[in-house]
Image (cartoon, rainbow, N blue to C red):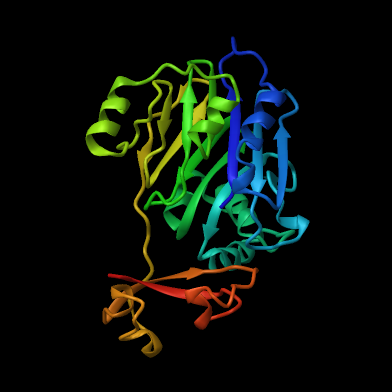
Length: 285
């Protein structure tokens, strides 16, 4: 779990972004990322990213964020984990892309450089991220298909803001706090908020399984993307009949890799499969 945030002053009439607001929003999410923090602001002060880090993959400073590519034209802030990042990395290396770290974050940068917004189709994992494309002067955001990782945004017609938490956006001080009657009613009737609603008029959730692009014309409507699932494969014998529940019992399953460079606690139920947390989880087909 990490905390991400950013600001883009996309309209010509918008003021340059406030580094103070960027950091204030970021540090409101300190509990989401106790292992490190970072911020990046573009040379023209029109775009900025913040990040609070919980180290999972590549525990070195090479995995610190926000992360830029070699020429600085792409910058990413990322929360989550890409389960198939090793497979994607091998494919990108075969195309000539060079990596400077062992993180899944850097894979996102090169995958975007290779495929643009279509990159989302190839990702398997839980994620929410934003990429600044300096050449095209646009921001690309994406959220995983199951909505495991949160991502909220606000657009006042001149400046676009996003963060992992609603309260973090409010803490920045640049957002109108007027309540959204539809959100309030939904919360009391349903006990939850259907996406994209929040309790505030100006704040929306990027729906699960959607991407969004923000250009000088503003934020385009969120777009749903289909995820390319791996081929079906049989469940390993060691997981058949496991007391871990129904995800381990189907004859056919979709497989995902949950990967970490940290060691699991002996008390963690997953530790019996692998103390080093390189775990193959199987989801029903």
